[in-house]
Length: 307
Ligand SMILES: Nc1nc2c(ncn2[C@@H]2O[C@H](COP(=O)(O)OP(=O)(O)OP(=O)(O)O)[C@@H](O)[C@H]2O)c(=O)[nH]1
Ligand SMILES: [Zn+2]
Image 1 (cartoon, rainbow, N blue to C red):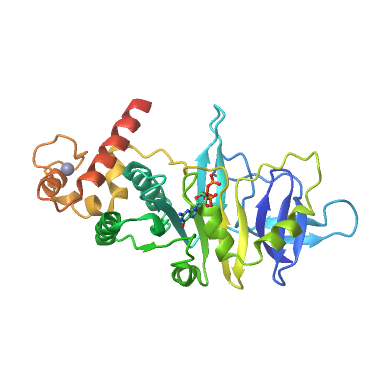
Image 2: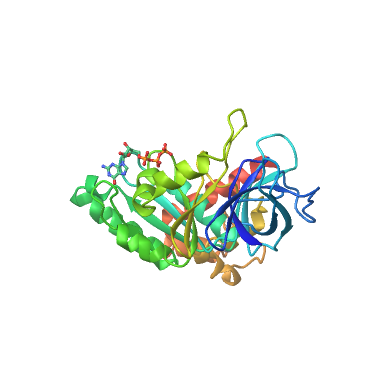
Protein backbone atom coordinates (compact mmCIF):
# COMPACT_ATOMS: atom_id res chain seq x y z
CA UNK A 1 0.00 0.00 0.00
CA UNK A 2 0.98 3.57 -0.52
CA UNK A 3 0.69 6.26 2.10
CA UNK A 4 2.01 9.46 3.61
CA UNK A 5 3.72 9.81 6.98
CA UNK A 6 1.57 12.12 9.11
CA UNK A 7 3.37 11.76 12.40
CA UNK A 8 6.78 10.60 13.50
CA UNK A 9 7.98 9.91 16.99
CA UNK A 10 11.38 8.61 16.03
CA UNK A 11 10.54 5.02 16.91
CA UNK A 12 7.23 4.62 15.13
CA UNK A 13 5.21 6.46 12.53
CA UNK A 14 1.63 7.12 11.62
CA UNK A 15 0.92 6.57 7.96
CA UNK A 16 -2.27 7.66 6.20
CA UNK A 17 -3.32 5.48 3.29
CA UNK A 18 -5.29 6.57 0.22
CA UNK A 19 -8.59 5.96 2.05
CA UNK A 20 -7.46 8.20 4.93
CA UNK A 21 -7.04 5.27 7.31
CA UNK A 22 -4.20 5.59 9.79
CA UNK A 23 -1.67 2.84 10.34
CA UNK A 24 0.91 2.68 13.06
CA UNK A 25 4.05 1.67 11.27
CA UNK A 26 7.69 0.89 11.73
CA UNK A 27 10.53 0.82 9.29
CA UNK A 28 11.71 -2.49 7.94
CA UNK A 29 15.35 -3.19 8.62
CA UNK A 30 17.88 -0.45 8.45
CA UNK A 31 17.23 2.49 6.22
CA UNK A 32 20.12 4.68 5.31
CA UNK A 33 19.78 8.01 3.61
CA UNK A 34 22.43 7.91 1.00
CA UNK A 35 23.60 11.47 0.76
CA UNK A 36 22.16 13.03 3.86
CA UNK A 37 23.65 13.11 7.30
CA UNK A 38 20.38 12.96 9.14
CA UNK A 39 19.30 11.51 12.44
CA UNK A 40 15.85 10.44 11.21
CA UNK A 41 15.39 8.33 8.10
CA UNK A 42 11.73 9.22 7.74
CA UNK A 43 9.84 12.47 8.26
CA UNK A 44 6.31 13.82 8.16
CA UNK A 45 5.27 14.28 4.54
CA UNK A 46 7.33 11.36 3.29
CA UNK A 47 5.53 9.19 0.76
CA UNK A 48 6.03 5.54 1.57
CA UNK A 49 5.03 2.04 0.60
CA UNK A 50 4.07 -0.35 3.35
CA UNK A 51 2.65 -3.78 4.12
CA UNK A 52 -0.14 -4.17 6.61
CA UNK A 53 0.54 -6.75 9.30
CA UNK A 54 -1.98 -8.50 11.42
CA UNK A 55 0.25 -9.37 14.33
CA UNK A 56 2.23 -7.30 16.75
CA UNK A 57 1.80 -3.82 18.07
CA UNK A 58 2.68 -2.05 14.87
CA UNK A 59 0.15 -2.61 12.17
CA UNK A 60 2.32 -1.79 9.21
CA UNK A 61 5.86 -2.13 7.97
CA UNK A 62 7.32 0.50 5.71
CA UNK A 63 9.62 -0.96 3.10
CA UNK A 64 10.08 1.92 0.70
CA UNK A 65 10.52 5.69 0.94
CA UNK A 66 9.90 7.61 -2.25
CA UNK A 67 12.35 10.26 -3.37
CA UNK A 68 11.59 13.63 -1.79
CA UNK A 69 10.62 16.62 -3.87
CA UNK A 70 12.05 18.80 -1.13
CA UNK A 71 12.50 18.78 2.62
CA UNK A 72 13.54 21.06 5.40
CA UNK A 73 16.04 20.12 8.02
CA UNK A 74 17.30 21.59 11.18
CA UNK A 75 20.70 21.20 12.63
CA UNK A 76 20.66 18.66 15.41
CA UNK A 77 20.94 20.23 18.82
CA UNK A 78 23.59 17.68 19.73
CA UNK A 79 27.11 18.47 18.72
CA UNK A 80 27.06 15.99 15.91
CA UNK A 81 27.21 16.46 12.19
CA UNK A 82 23.69 15.09 11.94
CA UNK A 83 20.63 17.12 11.08
CA UNK A 84 16.99 16.38 11.62
CA UNK A 85 14.50 16.36 8.75
CA UNK A 86 11.48 18.34 9.92
CA UNK A 87 9.18 17.66 6.98
CA UNK A 88 9.25 16.54 3.37
CA UNK A 89 7.33 17.20 0.14
CA UNK A 90 6.05 20.67 0.97
CA UNK A 91 4.25 22.88 -1.54
CA UNK A 92 4.63 26.06 0.47
CA UNK A 93 5.33 27.51 3.90
CA UNK A 94 3.23 30.03 5.80
CA UNK A 95 4.86 32.16 8.44
CA UNK A 96 2.45 33.58 10.96
CA UNK A 97 3.61 36.92 12.31
CA UNK A 98 2.13 39.65 14.50
CA UNK A 99 2.81 43.35 14.70
CA UNK A 100 1.62 43.61 18.30
CA UNK A 101 1.42 41.31 21.29
CA UNK A 102 4.10 40.12 20.55
CA UNK A 103 5.77 41.85 17.66
CA UNK A 104 7.64 39.64 15.21
CA UNK A 105 11.04 41.08 14.36
CA UNK A 106 12.10 41.65 10.79
CA UNK A 107 15.18 39.57 11.49
CA UNK A 108 12.99 36.59 12.34
CA UNK A 109 10.81 37.05 9.25
CA UNK A 110 13.79 37.43 6.95
CA UNK A 111 15.61 34.41 8.36
CA UNK A 112 12.49 32.39 7.68
CA UNK A 113 12.27 33.70 4.12
CA UNK A 114 15.94 32.95 3.48
CA UNK A 115 15.42 29.42 4.75
CA UNK A 116 12.41 28.96 2.47
CA UNK A 117 14.47 30.28 -0.46
CA UNK A 118 17.30 27.91 0.39
CA UNK A 119 14.89 24.97 0.29
CA UNK A 120 13.09 26.36 -2.75
CA UNK A 121 9.76 26.44 -0.95
CA UNK A 122 7.38 29.34 -1.71
CA UNK A 123 6.71 31.38 1.42
CA UNK A 124 3.72 33.50 2.42
CA UNK A 125 3.26 35.76 5.44
CA UNK A 126 0.12 35.85 7.57
CA UNK A 127 -0.30 38.92 9.77
CA UNK A 128 -2.43 37.66 12.65
CA UNK A 129 -4.20 39.51 15.47
CA UNK A 130 -5.38 42.33 13.20
CA UNK A 131 -8.19 42.90 15.73
CA UNK A 132 -5.51 44.48 17.92
CA UNK A 133 -4.14 46.81 15.26
CA UNK A 134 -5.10 50.46 15.56
CA UNK A 135 -5.14 52.62 12.45
CA UNK A 136 -1.43 53.36 12.59
CA UNK A 137 -0.55 49.71 12.90
CA UNK A 138 -2.95 48.86 10.08
CA UNK A 139 -1.19 51.36 7.87
CA UNK A 140 2.17 49.97 8.94
CA UNK A 141 0.98 46.47 8.12
CA UNK A 142 -0.02 47.58 4.62
CA UNK A 143 3.41 49.12 4.11
CA UNK A 144 5.20 45.97 5.22
CA UNK A 145 2.89 43.83 3.07
CA UNK A 146 3.68 46.08 0.11
CA UNK A 147 7.42 45.88 0.76
CA UNK A 148 7.38 42.07 0.89
CA UNK A 149 4.97 41.92 -2.05
CA UNK A 150 7.44 43.81 -4.21
CA UNK A 151 10.10 41.17 -3.68
CA UNK A 152 7.72 38.33 -4.37
CA UNK A 153 6.21 37.36 -1.00
CA UNK A 154 2.44 37.48 -0.73
CA UNK A 155 0.81 38.15 2.58
CA UNK A 156 -2.62 38.09 4.18
CA UNK A 157 -4.10 39.78 7.20
CA UNK A 158 -6.10 37.65 9.62
CA UNK A 159 -7.55 37.53 13.06
CA UNK A 160 -8.10 34.22 14.76
CA UNK A 161 -10.02 36.04 17.48
CA UNK A 162 -12.53 37.58 15.05
CA UNK A 163 -12.27 34.71 12.57
CA UNK A 164 -11.27 37.12 9.84
CA UNK A 165 -9.15 36.13 6.89
CA UNK A 166 -9.77 32.43 7.50
CA UNK A 167 -11.44 31.81 4.14
CA UNK A 168 -8.57 33.60 2.41
CA UNK A 169 -6.07 31.38 4.20
CA UNK A 170 -8.15 28.34 3.27
CA UNK A 171 -8.03 29.40 -0.38
CA UNK A 172 -4.24 29.67 -0.15
CA UNK A 173 -3.99 26.19 1.31
CA UNK A 174 -6.41 24.48 -1.07
CA UNK A 175 -4.95 21.46 -2.84
CA UNK A 176 -1.55 21.87 -1.24
CA UNK A 177 0.60 20.66 1.61
CA UNK A 178 1.65 23.66 3.66
CA UNK A 179 4.04 24.03 6.53
CA UNK A 180 2.83 26.43 9.22
CA UNK A 181 5.43 28.23 11.25
CA UNK A 182 5.61 31.08 13.70
CA UNK A 183 7.19 31.97 17.00
CA UNK A 184 5.43 31.37 20.26
CA UNK A 185 2.30 33.39 20.92
CA UNK A 186 1.47 34.49 17.38
CA UNK A 187 -1.72 32.43 17.35
CA UNK A 188 -0.60 29.46 15.30
CA UNK A 189 -2.64 26.98 17.35
CA UNK A 190 -5.68 29.26 17.26
CA UNK A 191 -5.49 29.48 13.47
CA UNK A 192 -4.93 25.75 13.06
CA UNK A 193 -7.99 25.11 15.20
CA UNK A 194 -10.06 27.25 12.85
CA UNK A 195 -8.59 25.65 9.74
CA UNK A 196 -8.85 22.03 10.81
CA UNK A 197 -12.45 21.65 11.87
CA UNK A 198 -12.19 18.17 13.31
CA UNK A 199 -8.80 18.70 14.91
CA UNK A 200 -10.00 17.61 18.33
CA UNK A 201 -11.32 14.42 16.82
CA UNK A 202 -8.19 13.83 14.77
CA UNK A 203 -5.94 14.41 17.75
CA UNK A 204 -7.96 11.99 19.87
CA UNK A 205 -7.83 9.42 17.10
CA UNK A 206 -4.09 9.76 16.86
CA UNK A 207 -3.41 9.71 20.57
CA UNK A 208 -5.19 6.35 20.77
CA UNK A 209 -2.14 4.99 19.06
CA UNK A 210 0.37 6.38 21.49
CA UNK A 211 1.30 4.10 24.27
CA UNK A 212 2.21 5.60 27.58
CA UNK A 213 5.85 5.54 28.45
CA UNK A 214 6.90 5.97 24.87
CA UNK A 215 8.85 9.14 24.33
CA UNK A 216 6.61 11.05 21.96
CA UNK A 217 8.54 14.13 21.06
CA UNK A 218 7.06 14.98 17.72
CA UNK A 219 8.86 17.31 15.47
CA UNK A 220 5.99 17.87 13.11
CA UNK A 221 2.50 16.61 12.49
CA UNK A 222 0.31 16.65 9.42
CA UNK A 223 -3.39 17.51 9.59
CA UNK A 224 -6.04 17.20 6.93
CA UNK A 225 -7.88 20.43 6.15
CA UNK A 226 -9.88 18.62 3.51
CA UNK A 227 -9.19 16.03 0.84
CA UNK A 228 -5.94 17.04 -0.97
CA UNK A 229 -5.29 19.85 1.51
CA UNK A 230 -2.92 19.37 4.41
CA UNK A 231 -1.07 21.47 6.90
CA UNK A 232 2.04 20.51 8.78
CA UNK A 233 2.41 21.95 12.24
CA UNK A 234 5.82 22.14 13.81
CA UNK A 235 5.21 22.32 17.55
CA UNK A 236 8.24 23.27 19.54
CA UNK A 237 10.14 24.46 16.53
CA UNK A 238 10.48 28.18 16.90
CA UNK A 239 12.67 28.69 13.93
CA UNK A 240 13.58 26.60 10.96
CA UNK A 241 17.22 25.66 10.86
CA UNK A 242 19.19 27.29 8.16
CA UNK A 243 21.55 25.07 6.32
CA UNK A 244 25.00 26.57 6.29
CA UNK A 245 25.05 29.16 3.58
CA UNK A 246 28.51 30.48 2.66
CA UNK A 247 28.75 34.26 3.11
CA UNK A 248 29.37 34.76 -0.59
CA UNK A 249 26.08 33.02 -1.40
CA UNK A 250 23.78 34.48 1.23
CA UNK A 251 22.51 37.24 -1.06
CA UNK A 252 21.30 34.61 -3.55
CA UNK A 253 18.50 33.96 -1.09
CA UNK A 254 17.38 37.59 -1.00
CA UNK A 255 15.44 37.94 -4.30
CA UNK A 256 15.97 41.70 -4.49
CA UNK A 257 19.73 41.23 -4.12
CA UNK A 258 19.87 38.20 -6.37
CA UNK A 259 18.48 40.24 -9.26
CA UNK A 260 21.21 42.89 -8.85
CA UNK A 261 24.13 40.51 -8.34
CA UNK A 262 25.63 40.92 -11.78
CA UNK A 263 25.68 44.69 -11.41
CA UNK A 264 28.25 44.75 -8.59
CA UNK A 265 31.83 45.58 -9.58
CA UNK A 266 33.22 42.43 -7.95
CA UNK A 267 31.65 39.13 -8.76
CA UNK A 268 32.29 37.87 -5.23
CA UNK A 269 30.78 41.01 -3.68
CA UNK A 270 29.28 40.43 -0.22
CA UNK A 271 27.47 43.80 -0.45
CA UNK A 272 28.99 44.90 2.83
CA UNK A 273 31.55 47.59 2.08
CA UNK A 274 32.80 46.84 -1.39
CA UNK A 275 33.11 49.74 -3.82
CA UNK A 276 30.80 49.66 -6.81
CA UNK A 277 28.20 47.56 -5.00
CA UNK A 278 24.81 47.65 -6.72
CA UNK A 279 23.03 46.40 -3.62
CA UNK A 280 24.38 49.18 -1.39
CA UNK A 281 23.46 51.61 -4.15
CA UNK A 282 19.90 50.25 -4.20
CA UNK A 283 19.63 50.53 -0.40
CA UNK A 284 20.76 54.17 -0.63
CA UNK A 285 18.16 54.80 -3.32
CA UNK A 286 15.48 53.07 -1.19
CA UNK A 287 14.95 50.48 -3.90
CA UNK A 288 15.96 47.82 -1.39
CA UNK A 289 14.36 48.05 2.04
CA UNK A 290 16.72 49.03 4.82
CA UNK A 291 15.23 46.44 7.17
CA UNK A 292 15.89 43.71 4.64
CA UNK A 293 19.46 44.91 4.20
CA UNK A 294 19.93 44.99 7.98
CA UNK A 295 18.66 41.43 8.21
CA UNK A 296 21.10 40.48 5.49
CA UNK A 297 24.06 42.07 7.29
CA UNK A 298 23.10 40.48 10.57
CA UNK A 299 22.95 37.06 8.96
CA UNK A 300 26.16 37.68 7.06
CA UNK A 301 28.06 38.52 10.23
CA UNK A 302 26.58 35.64 12.17
CA UNK A 303 27.76 33.33 9.45
CA UNK A 304 31.23 34.81 9.71
CA UNK A 305 31.31 34.42 13.47
CA UNK A 306 30.56 30.74 13.23
CA UNK A 307 33.62 30.10 11.14
N1 LIG B 1 -6.44 39.38 20.08
C1 LIG B 1 -6.10 38.24 19.50
N2 LIG B 1 -5.53 37.27 20.23
C2 LIG B 1 -5.18 36.12 19.61
C3 LIG B 1 -5.39 35.92 18.23
N3 LIG B 1 -4.93 34.70 17.90
C4 LIG B 1 -4.45 34.16 19.04
N4 LIG B 1 -4.60 35.01 20.07
C5 LIG B 1 -4.21 34.80 21.49
O1 LIG B 1 -2.79 34.76 21.53
C6 LIG B 1 -2.35 33.79 22.48
C7 LIG B 1 -1.46 32.77 21.81
O2 LIG B 1 -2.24 32.03 20.89
P1 LIG B 1 -1.87 30.54 20.46
O3 LIG B 1 -2.81 30.13 19.41
O4 LIG B 1 -1.73 29.67 21.64
O5 LIG B 1 -0.44 30.85 19.86
P2 LIG B 1 0.69 29.86 19.34
O6 LIG B 1 1.32 30.55 18.22
O7 LIG B 1 0.14 28.52 19.06
O8 LIG B 1 1.67 29.86 20.56
P3 LIG B 1 2.41 28.64 21.26
O9 LIG B 1 1.33 27.75 21.76
O10 LIG B 1 3.21 29.31 22.34
O11 LIG B 1 3.26 28.04 20.19
C8 LIG B 1 -3.61 33.20 23.09
O12 LIG B 1 -3.90 33.88 24.26
C9 LIG B 1 -4.67 33.47 22.02
O13 LIG B 1 -5.94 33.57 22.57
C10 LIG B 1 -6.00 36.97 17.48
O14 LIG B 1 -6.23 36.91 16.27
N5 LIG B 1 -6.30 38.11 18.18
ZN1 LIG C 1 27.47 44.10 -4.02
